[in-house]
Image (cartoon, rainbow, N blue to C red; front, side):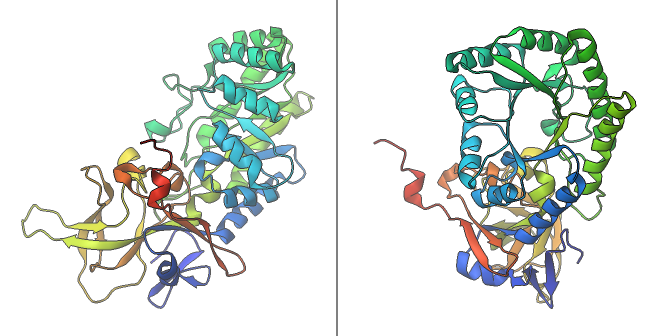
Length: 430
């Protein structure tokens, strides 16, 4: 069976992660649980380093993809910046490792308290999403008697060819300011006494598998940069081209790797500036899924098998993971490859819908998968390193899962402890 990452492979009949048998990890940490490969993450970080060495480029890790403090620490050790969308994510970055952090604060609904926290912590830039937000930022900065570094997020109206829920660069999306209103935004920002205009920001969506939408967006941003200079006189010191680079969730999909993506897009900008005999600005990218997405799996145990004798009926494999642990399938109709932890020759292959214990018909993790299953078997969902644990909830009063990492030195470490029941209701007042 061809798997999605070289870090996960079968030896004889058992699935391993970087030399460690998955079944042995589960014996100690039980199910359901997330398991990550440090080697996979570090390999991606090395690709980023190769693509950016010698260039004025900062890659910001998108904390929302996986906010584990240990993963943030890995990103910080490789000198990545951080893209955050809340005060909570900022605080995670600040405590994850010592030393200064380059933080970009994104998101359409920043509160005054969050803006104040960001400015007090000397972040790199606030990505402004509306004219109203500019006024709020200026007011908060005035109260602190300092200038707020801002970047205006422009919506380039580029179709990213992805799921509509994770498309962010079209006119109908809530993100950013249209190019029609963009010049007014820059003029307003220039006139505000407690705002310092630093750059321009663009983000067209997530899980984008083609390089073409990124090229289109970059070219439109550069065209708009030319307008900004001509109509406002503002010289931008950085361009933030966002992220959204996709990963393969099945073996049929093709994808562009990190190094190729960063080199190609940055060269478009550098060439554009050099043709005009201008100094290229500092470039920023915001990447998350492409760094950690295929580093992880979700391991779960088959509790019950419900086989139908009805000709039009279905076969259900009820597992101990649920939609609160892995919401992407029911939220986005997302596909995750499913594989057994141990290859099973004792039973015949059937087509199964894999479902969880939650009392919702939408509690399904995979549909119509051909697998050999027995009750008690362990199976796993691949590509679970991004937007899985970070989107988990306590629905049905279910505990959040443990998260385990297999380190490059062969050690196994629990990086997030399984929640206990007392922690779940510790905040409640009776």
